Image (cartoon, rainbow, N blue to C red):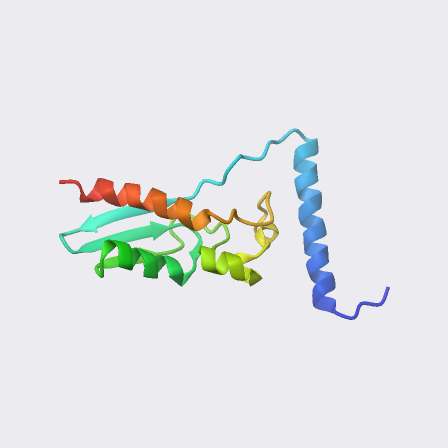
Length: 136
């Protein structure tokens, strides 16, 4: 076999190994969870500082959004608790590419891509956490 693009062949080999692992899990009776658990945290420090922790590698859109929604004293920290893959915003998801495209196989996830509403799901959960820490 002649391969014009060795990187493409390598990528196909990675996908093939991922598919084999997923099929083996199914064949041995292991069920995939209906959704990935995603760690989120919110801490209030004094009156003006809000620290938000998000699992995995997030894109900058989350920091920009949460600063806009919660105020300039908001700090967003990625890699909190877990590195489960890139977590794209809707903008990045629509662009595709490495961070927003079908790359979850590289992390051993049982899906190729996050759902398109992942940013909204995360924002909804983060708003609930922030409401809790802002209660007096």
